[in-house]
Length: 352
Image 1 (cartoon, helix red, strand yellow):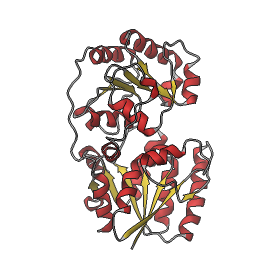
Image 2: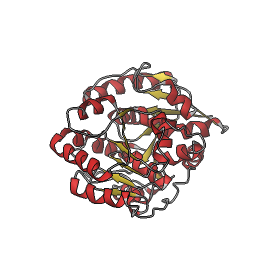
Image 3: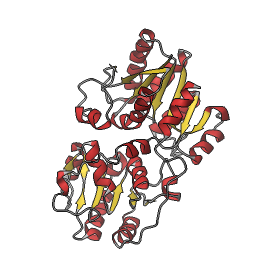
Image 4: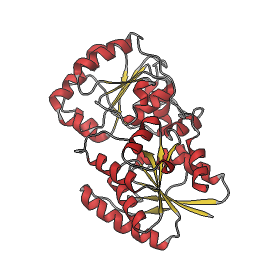
C-alpha cells in the first residue's frame, strides 16, 4: 500500500490537489493524508471551499502562522519533521512555490523520502523573487517533476533534471474546471447582467499595488475604455482597502466562493487579472484575458491560449482593452494535455 502525504501551504493549493485526492480515493493500492501548514481556524479555509471542491478538510494542521518568510520556513520544517516521524510515508507531494512548500520539500529529502513536485519547471527568471528561489530548490530536490507543458519540461531539462524524473502530466487546474463544469453557481452580483456582457477584474500582486501612481493610471484606463460595460471585481478585503485610497469607479466585491467565481470567469466577455491561475482558467474557457504582468509561468496561455501580457503599462492595457471590448481578440486553443486528466496520470505514476 502506497502511503502519500499531500502537503498544502495556502488556499489555492487545494484547488490543485482536489483532483488528485478524488483520483486516489477511486484507486486501490494507495492512500493519503492531507496536511496543511497553517491553522485549523484559518479564515481563508471556509467550509464552503471543501464542499465546493468535494474533498475533506485536512487531516493535519501544522499550525504555523507568521508573516516573516524565514521564520515561517523554519517553523514549518520543525512541525513537518514531527509529522513525518509520527506517520509512515512513502511519498510527499508538494504544490507550487511557497516558502512552506520549500520547507516541506527540504525535510522530505533529509528523511530520504520520495518527493513529487506538482507544477514543476515554472520560472520567472527573476532571482530577486523569493518564489523563484523556492522553485529552484524544490525542483532540484524532487524525484518526480510533474509539469504542465513542454516549456516547463524544457526548463527542467536545461537545469539538469534527469529525463526519467520529468513527467508532462498537463495542467492540474484544468481537472478542477472540467469536474465542476456543470456545478458552477451563478453569483448574485450578476443579477440583471447578461452572460458575456461584463468584464472581470482581479488584482492581488504586491508589486502592482505598491506603485499607487501607476495603479491609478491603470484604473483610470479601465474606467475609460470599458464605458458602460459592468466590471465585476471580486477582491480580498486588504486589496479593497488599498483601492479605497485611490479614485476609481469600481465597486469591489468580497472574494467569491469557488463555484461562483468559476461561473463568473467562464461566462465573462473578458478578464483583466494579475493572477497566473486565472489566466490559465481563461484559456481553458476560451475567454479573452489581459494579464497585468510582464511574464507568465505558463507561456502556453499566450502562445496558444487567450492570454495577453501587458505588464504594468497603462498604454498597452488601453490597446488590449479596446480590442477586447470590440470583440477583436485572438482565438485560442487548448495546450497539449490541458484536458482535465492530469490527476489520473499522476496517480498512475505514483503507483508505478
